[in-house]
Image (cartoon, rainbow, N blue to C red):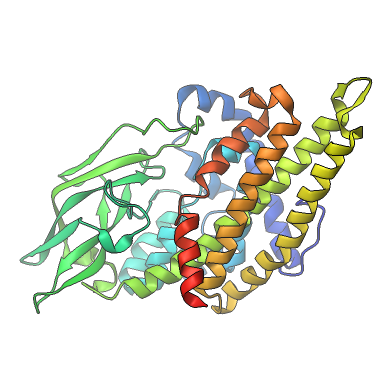
Length: 383
């Protein structure tokens, strides 16, 4: 359905790019997914392969290695990631644009020119390290700290749920800093994964049995030179961080809605070809009522997501709108997945059935990038 519905927010050039992204998943990901699932990890060259297709950092200016597009190009990558069963298996997968946009918005010119072209080529795999073992959505509770030592900083702390962590070679670390006036600030440091004192764990065994790689990372007296301080700011990074999170939550909301559309399409096909009591499962009134509700929910939510996507281009998307999009898309997605799995009957519990993988991954979407409860708080405070 995603491919059949023209949407005013996207230009013909955007839709051309969509075809390229879809071809990448069809040619480079889907044929390998079963093998990757058995290995418990996707191919480490996945990002370089994506770069060859020209789909990494497509929204970045050409001077930084991108193709000069806009944020909608990144949204398309997220949508196509959602609209494929293989995308469900690789979990966070290609979602490295959050950290690259943080460098783009907050970094110095030198940092942008050093790092962003390497994102575009697939040579850099990165994930911003926010979450800590003792806290999740509450970024103000961080304990990871950076102590100034001459012209360097010494970082100590721990982060978890680092997506693609096994393959990450750059770790932008969110840390507390000690300011000259005795107060504390927050900053981000661009830490190489192979710096002395950086220790990665094995992938965390999660409910999602795909081939994604979430890990914990420990920082023990990691010495980082001052030029790795993002934007050269020991404090004041929060505004840029919130801008990135606002856009990123919307991109993920677009992905969740696309996954819901995929689940709907797969389920319609399944019930029309599955028979019980002398008729197709589709012919039962309950099935048609369920599908009617699902289609209506998708159709009603789509214009709001597209309206928000349009606002990312001119920078007018608000945190409240982003939270509403992420909240509604993730909650709707899980509800749709659950009903689609039910319509598959016992077959829905077989891992070989696409709906099983889609259902499992959708559960975490109500948690990451801010739990549904946190987004309700954000929306409530804005009223």
